[in-house]
Amino acid sequence: MPGQYDRYQQGFYQEVYDEFLAMQEHVFESHAYEEALLVARAIMKRVRYNIELLIPRLHLMGYHFGEGFSEEPEEAAYWEQEAPIYKAPTSETPYLVVRLEQSAGILPLTLKCWYEEVGNVNFVGTFPVYENRKERVADGSLLDPLFIYSVKMALTIGEDNWSEINDISIAPDRFFKYGYSEGGSYSIRTPCKMFDAPLEGYEVPEITFVNYLRLCFRWGGFPGLEKQHSLTAEKLEFLTKDLLPF
Image 1: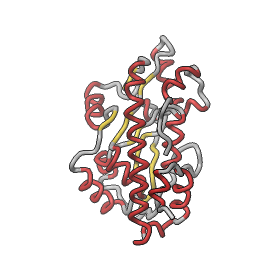
Image 2 (image 1 turned 180 degrees about the horizontal axis):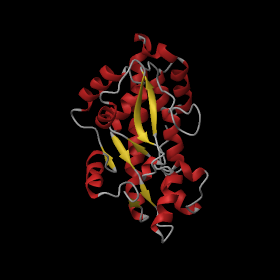
Image 3 (image 1 turned 135 degrees about the horizontal axis):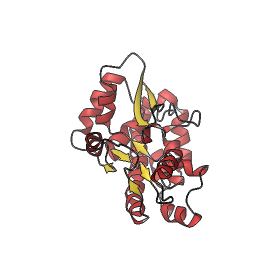
Image 4 (image 1 turned 90 degrees about the vertical axis):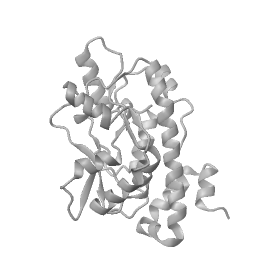
């Protein structure tokens, strides 16, 4: 009988994911861990592929990357350096993941593999659907573009604030992405010896990190499009064509 990794590669994405999720902490036991890690890496490699497809498509659509995220030049320069549109992991990433786990506790395998296989992504910006900039920015906050911090930023944000139970900030929420002061963050609670974990602070209760990413890609990187129909069906189809399931 094929192992879970082989079954995942054959297209049983949801089935294998559900099996590992149901194992809870047992996924960290020796008989399951290596295969679970292989699957988590395979998931994130497909996620990275999707991100790398979406970025040039958004450029072609005239998407204004960065608009609305930061108004001050110095702050904008900082975020452009620390949270660019996309940045792959670096050679120091495994070391930083170890540091994060030492500070905040064990990471769920999916988040560990996000850091090691994907890196960071920042789709904050606006679609050119309105002439008025304020309208574009307001619409952007409703669309809640995909944005996940790098492990380096997760460490920076959490520095000196770790306790016995920690929330690792993985992204600003949809309000804070556009500078609204009442904004907070999406986070994952650690330690978490699980395959995947709930995304704290998100409007869909108990949604896991991977299911949040699935929702993002279902809507071309903008989960808010499920309710806020700013794009035509043709434009959404252009964005989502040939994205990989995971």
